[in-house]
Length: 280
Image 1 (tube, one colour):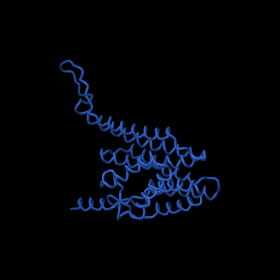
Image 2 (cartoon, rainbow, N blue to C red):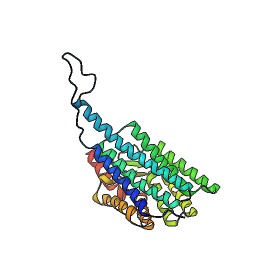
Image 3 (cartoon, helix red, strand yellow):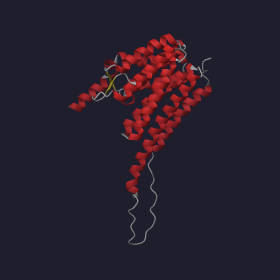
Image 4 (cartoon, helix red, strand yellow):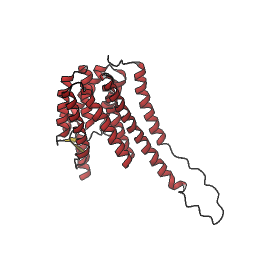
C-alpha cells in the first residue's frame, strides 16, 4: 500500500523547511560581545581572542553549522527513503528524494552566498549526496530479483564514479549529469508509474549513461540566476506541499528532463554570460 498523502506528512515537510530558514536567519544575527573581565595592571590578557577578533570567527562558525545541519537533514531524508524502500513504500521513498532534490539546491545556494568553504562541510555534503542520490535512489529499483539488484549496484557505482572522479575544470560547468537530477528523474518516474520496475530499469540505465558520460552541464545556480528560474524552484516547493503526487512528479520530471536535454539553451545562458563577463 502506498504512503498516504496526509496532513501530518505535509506538516513534517513544512516544519523542516521552516526550521532550516530559522537556523539560517539565526546564524545571520549579529553576535553581541561579552564585556571583558577586569585585569590587574601589568597582567597579560592577550591569551584569548578579543571581542573584535572573535566576532568574525563566531559568525563564520555559526554559518558553517547551518550548512552542515542542512546537509545532515538531507542525509537523514535519504536514510528515511532507504527505510521506506525496504518497507515496500515506494511512494514515500520517492517523495523523500524529491524533497532532498530541492533541499540540496538550497544548501548549495546558501554555501555560495555566504562564501563558506570547509573540509568538514564538503565531506559531509558528499556523504549526504551519495546516501540520498546514490543509495536511496538505487533502491527504488528494488532488490527482489537478480537483475534489479545488479542494476542497483551499477547505479550506485556510477554515482560514486561521478562524485569521485569527474571534475570539469571549466568554470560554471559540471562533467557528467549531476546525481540529484538523475535521482529526481527516477523518483518522479516511480511516482508516475506506481513503481513499475521495467520502466524504472530503463530510466535508470539511461541515467547511468548520462552520469558517466563526459558531456558538460551548466551549474544550476537557480536561486542566484534569472527570475524565471527562481519561479521554477518556488513552483517546485508549492507543488510538493500542496499538489497531488502525480502533478508533483510530472512537474519535477519535466524540470529534470529539460536540464538533461536542453542544458545550454535553457539553463546555461546565464552561466555563459557570467563567464564572458569574468573574461572581459
